[in-house]
Length: 496
Image 1 (cartoon, rainbow, N blue to C red):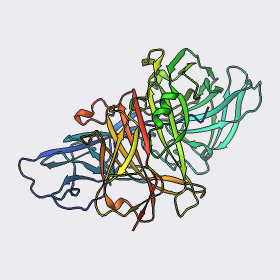
Image 2: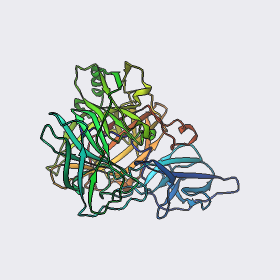
Image 3: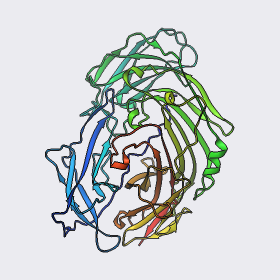
């Protein structure tokens, strides 16, 4: 149960673009100011927000040029009086390409919405101003228990702020305390997604968690401390978690399977998992935090009914329920012996306290059924695509019209470190609420993104709910419930 599913809504509409820096002519006194504001939300033990420091970052407005499918690039200016904000006077609203402090490396992001003023959120899992933990850092953990250990109990250390998890193996029933157990800090699971392990600080929380099967049954919290490198952690006695909440939801696996049967390339093998998590970032639909309950579903299940407890609710870590479903396929591109696993997925996120007993999980976000490049369906793996010389039009049509916004991600498929499989490396991402007259989401991908000899897949996503202020350009405000569905296109290789 320590390895609970982590399914996150894709960061709001991200697009990468690469265009030449042409100058824009014809801006006159009738132009108005376009603006783009970024708030950094550090999701940790305490969630903190501040304008993003734009030092070293760039923003460029992409203004349509006279030639169809081309753009003039106009550099935006940082606004001294408004930290975290770029602006530029332009005749009309225009897409904006920005760089943000992504990890492991920044990718350009383009936001294409019909608003002069856009506000977005950059929300990493972190405490403010993180620094690396010492390479040789060790933790020695001791946790007195409220009751002796029994068969089936398992324990782990979970840190919020530095965002790590580490199992504490006991293997013995009848223990009155856990530990002392010593382990190297860098052998933990790093939950933040960053390559470094962040040093524990007074801003963080360290818990010893007890599980009986998948249920969180006990919590012991250590006093905050600044990590020095060889730290002794002694918690107070563990406190039992009252299983005083109930989740009761319905699912319809045959309906899910029917929807998946329409996507191309075809996928198979319906997998379904659910989780209940105490999430510090629940307000922005981030479902990372101490797991409370969870499990898998089979094709004959009709729902989930379970008791659980959330001992972190007083901290404002509300419970997020996630239903994650997917089907997959495997493919080995020509010229390599390494396979890649591709998938389609439908996920739903909600606060169980706001869902009436018997709530029907319909996975309402439209599932993209087919992705096309310049009208060519990417319905099979292994296609060869000539290196483009102009912007590529990518379209997809979901199986319903519930989308709040559409997103697109382009992944370069490269060998993993062990040379056992290909893995996803993002090179382009896009988001928009623009559609064609037939309801297809439509994106323009710059030609220079594609490298000859490389194999790619395009992930198309649709999001339903989650952004109540989107109509006015507010992509900062988030809320639950939220649903998301995606499809990975056929793998294609770029040729000269």
